[in-house]
Image (tube, rainbow, N blue to C red):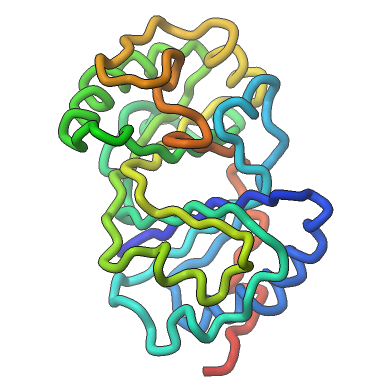
Length: 249
């Protein structure tokens, strides 16, 4: 199984009504035509104080679970064009996390869940091996010392067989941008926004800056360039397989 995670950012929040109509009427039914096993979307919640500086994406997160059988015959070319410009990050990851750092044994009933979804890549000139060594062996153990962190896991991104940037423009708004050249998706959970502020802004642990870092502060990857993030809750806003019929083939 392969999970496709897509972050969406509206360049202008006045475009929200038009974007919602396009997703529901056109895009979602057309995605369902490819028979995903699961298709969920989560509406981004307002960022905690200070979080917009961490490459905040303001709109929604889509998660598609599929069998990894490759592109369907109609592909992207048959999809209805976006009606508003969006900034999009699209990555494929394994269905299960490749690393589970903290909190797997915790019960969902024990606390509330405020999910910080992060997507990042190592800077140009830094090998994946070098970046991974720092993240897994140095950074992750330090992150686990955040005072309000309750859950922490990560996925290593699967490289796309075809450059997404060359395929997706077939249905994208001419002012939209899409990127897929990322290395990791990680999730960090807190009980609420206050827990995130306490852990990341007010009482962070001491971090080790990698020698190759071009950005001086945590997360040592430049927000909006090599690091993006958003916040969602535990429950999907929409479970599309249940509420929307697929478009005709």
